[in-house]
Image 1 (cartoon, one colour):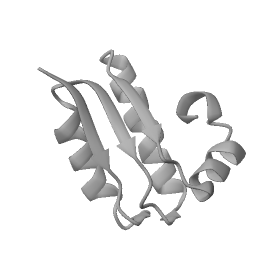
Image 2 (cartoon, helix red, strand yellow):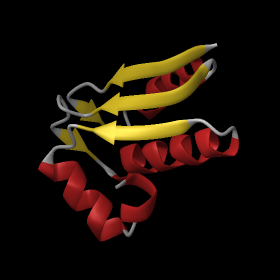
Image 3 (cartoon, helix red, strand yellow):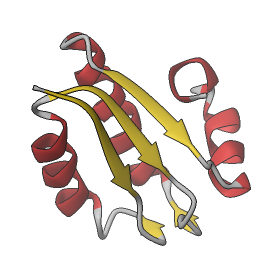
Length: 90
């Protein structure tokens, strides 16, 4: 079992990419104890993308897999704040 899996987000995480990212998140987190998500390249995210991050975080938590979101751009910070998900994704 791998200890840490690092996932690099691309420029967009919107409803158009959710299905692809859902599969990728599921595949890459299967054997990890911790998943680190680098959001540094992210320039566009919508509520579907945010919901995917939240659902992924909850899914990992149910398997005792820690999720760390880092290099979070201002656009994502603001979306997390206004959605009330600071505790879950902050």
